[in-house]
Length: 93
Image (tube, rainbow, N blue to C red; front, top):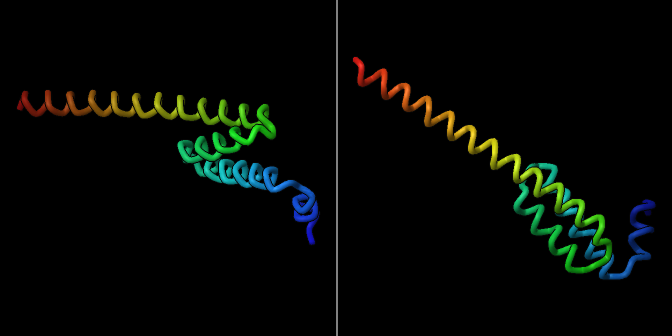
């Protein structure tokens, strides 16, 4: 049996659930699916086992989501400008 499994065997059911929620949130965070990561971290927070850790993870996801929204907005704004330029050139011809 691995060390991780031995450590996990000594945990309460609630602590095991907490670790599972954190692991699932981390899995989604790694692949940049922030909404689902936030869902799992929020479930972990409801268990009140390590609120400081979960709060840090939620803050990290929030920062990624904020950055992602800014990037999407900039991409859309750039697309609008390009479409306007193409339309203007088309109208000139």
